[in-house]
Length: 118
Image (cartoon, rainbow, N blue to C red):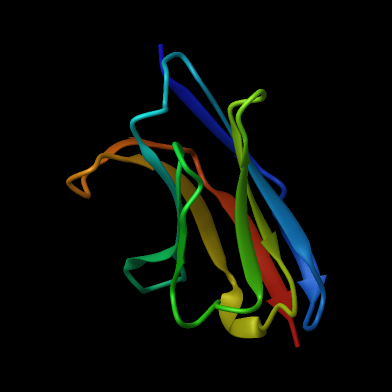
């Protein structure tokens, strides 16, 4: 059974930092990209960052470039999202996902709430 467990969300003041984790289990993810998406209240879920599991190449949404860093720990099968210089507009539920090479999502994590106060 595949599981993707996201954690690390919370309440932080603007300018602060949080690190999200996504622990994946139940299969080999070496052929996937691991992504973070977020969904703010009343809005669609949008892409935040992506890392290619094999090779480590990374991609970011323009809105988070220079502030967020995605990384992975192969031994722990875990993907991280380090979020610095947080802004109120970063407030959302953050989801991790396992993406196929064609861009589809095979697995979603359960989401973790990030709230940034001004």
